[in-house]
Image 1 (tube, rainbow, N blue to C red):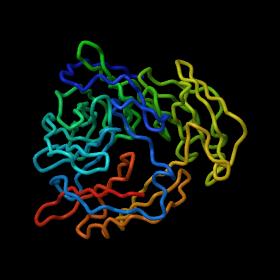
Image 2: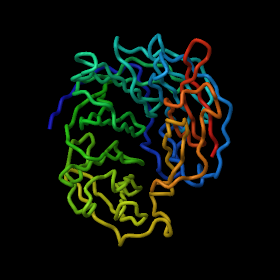
Image 3: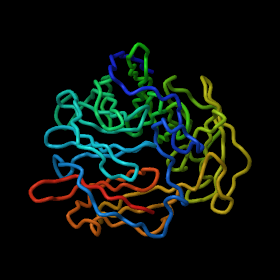
Image 4: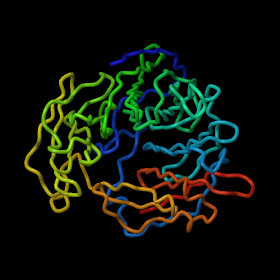
Length: 385
């Protein structure tokens, strides 16, 4: 395990939220908390057909295949993209409508945003600057920057140099702590260090065959399956192998559709399918700590007929059929839910291969690149499902 700590000034960072509520947490969050909204369910996003609002232009993109993203908290959202003049952010209403002007994101030369998440009083934006020959980066500098709720950037919060790898997951707890994992197994955490500073740490490098973010109200954490069939708990405390049997005969978190959420009891609740393509699942509870242990709860049940046990629900996910420019909703078992949304039908000038979807807590925001005369722009449409 590799542990490096970089303490850097975080002047003007958003602060003051004490709740650690996350998506999937029980209702009743304090109104001052700004974290990700509850995930979409069949009740909130499972209609047979979606009503799609007319598109709105958010800004100009650098090119057709430019990166962009939107993320939401309980009090609004933020769109982030790369323009021809650098990184830009723009605040969004809970319904996904732009609610202020586009602002520049002041990053070091060569750095570009790669992910964002609601946290504390605003949003955390993670950016990177590649190190090495063009097309063959060997490392990257990762930067963490906070913005206020209206998208105004603060002073750059912290940075660290790690082996290069695209992000595989980003989580925050609403109290200024976050964690992210790259596809090559580098685990990085960041959080307040006192005295107006933040600490950015690389806590582990792992070889994982599957990675799952722990949703819900708790410490930003991930579960990872290894080629040996074991399960690892990853968070600011480092990397710990989980005791107890899981996934009999499988060993891959993605193949078994492993889901994990913090419960109100402070433990990590999980479920996984008992066989490929099945709706039969096994529940379990993971006791966190320096020696995490997973124990199964009850016998396998058919979730399709028995329903879900809290903190789980009948969640809806989205997938992109990019060749045709369509967004398809599905349940957690991959079964289609309702009609697909055709972006090209909504906006004939859209590029079908560059679409992102964000859940606002009330509707899906569809972001996509489109032609507007001689320039490529970022547009957004809200889908009520």
